[in-house]
Image (cartoon, rainbow, N blue to C red; front, side):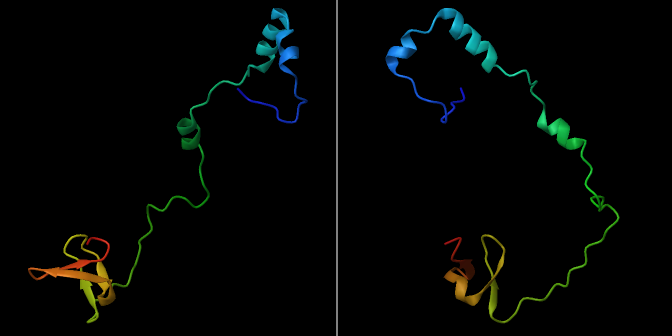
Length: 98
């Protein structure tokens, strides 16, 4: 239930004096007439400008592994030698996987 923190506060004595009709009227007023909307359904109808990238090709220059780099045997990412944590049975392991 939403609370209006700017409204003047009432004492507990005043709260007990509300009639049943007043409480029912407040409850009806507080209910919203807005219907729940499925956000996923609404999001599917939006079309972003320039969003169709189906015909685009991504070109990336791939560099070979450098002499000061190694490939972790657990996560298979290439790291700098400063990230080497351990070498077990010839397998190099980075700090994140150690």
